[in-house]
Image 1 (spheres, rainbow, N blue to C red):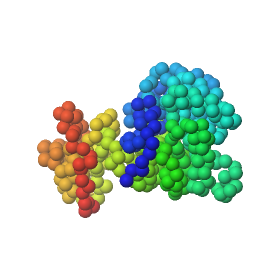
Image 2 (cartoon, rainbow, N blue to C red):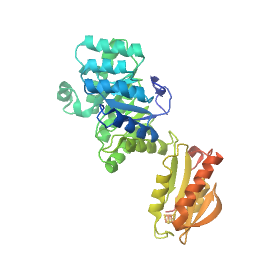
Image 3 (cartoon, protein in one colour):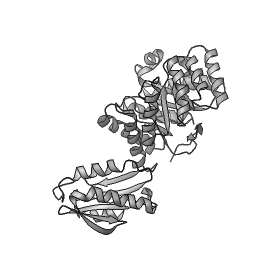
Image 4 (cartoon, rainbow, N blue to C red):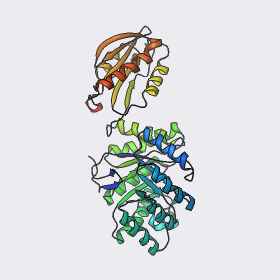
Length: 369
Ligand code: SF4
């Protein structure tokens, strides 16, 4: 069951309060490179990014934020560390959310000034605890960045804001260790009802990082914990967004774009370049936003069954692909032409508007492979 959380508004996106789990990511350009940053934001949006975080390390970045704000409507989170004046400048630039730890910006007067300005703009604050940068006294108390230490750190920041009657809060408790972040979020979920931003920080390269993120985020989301997610990879941000969507789609929490069921292949495979075909179909259909369920299967053992539960499917036999539509065989196409012809059928289907058969309606099959 989904954990109940307070609703927080980030421009046109609601986080928590029963809203769908949103996907966010962070630009990796130098923020002062306005054109480059806008280009990256557009790529992220194309991949389905709903909230974009931008680092604001200095005055030049804050000045660039003013220009960036004018060039995009995407909900923007300004990422601030230590400098309260940069937070004030970012708010003036028209950002939609602050990522800032109030305990790290100095005197309570400074915190109050930021909180009042934030309140005036109706903008939430995300408290972002990171296992790698915990307060020294907590590291001494707990020996290391344990889940309890991370939660205690988070609660300190929460109390600073609550003491100023500010509760427009989102919390993250990121660690690069999956077990640790899972425990930290579980613990925090028992203490507050603020929405939780999930992430495995510094997850790594696309291969390992995707697995770590899918594990950490997947466990929590499956337990109903988590209101917005960010996948962190040593890769372009739109890749992070793609992975985020796959995590949400695989748990049937959101629907977007093409889902291709493809068999792992085995000794019965009836076509030569199966992996290339599947990869090319996915690449050619990456622009599709509406949910479409497709299947590509290497032989007739499971092909017709999967095709039955797909809007369009291919089953191979003797180097020839049979295209199925809603489970009914349509036509045979030679392996060399299958990508082109299948993509054509998908585009026809989209035009027909026959994509109402949702992923949620598709029941998993028992595989014999
Ligand atoms: S559908 Fe199953 S049996 Fe047929 S090639 Fe793919 S993995 Fe092998």
